[in-house]
Length: 134
Image 1 (cartoon, rainbow, N blue to C red):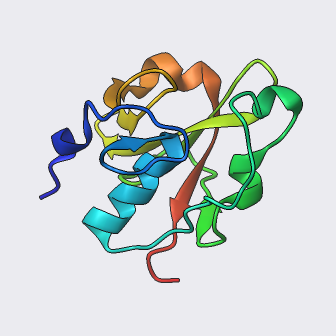
Image 2: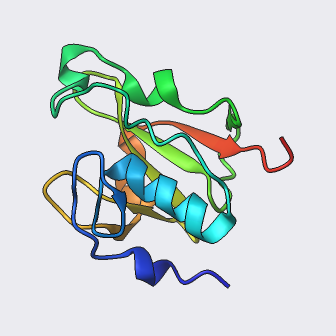
């Protein structure tokens, strides 16, 4: 049984990859590593800045591992990654489905938290699912 609560209230840190501070992908990275034993690329070599999506840079989709497939149905499963877009229309935020219409995520200048997907659905860019048998 996974305790998602231990991933709440972690402070935001750009390119953070440990529990002292995480960005939205770092939260996914550390969860997959600690809870699922899956080492994803850390993307620390990707050069980006705080307003990368506003400059048309699509770092999430350009760098997501090929062990994820796009979900074409709306039956989301635990550990699916939800990609959200900003005013530029680029996927600029990622969170992880934890079931029951909720997802785990962290925003810049905030802390990690569990939110209801319903209020974010209008910003949903797409969903990716890890191929556990890849």
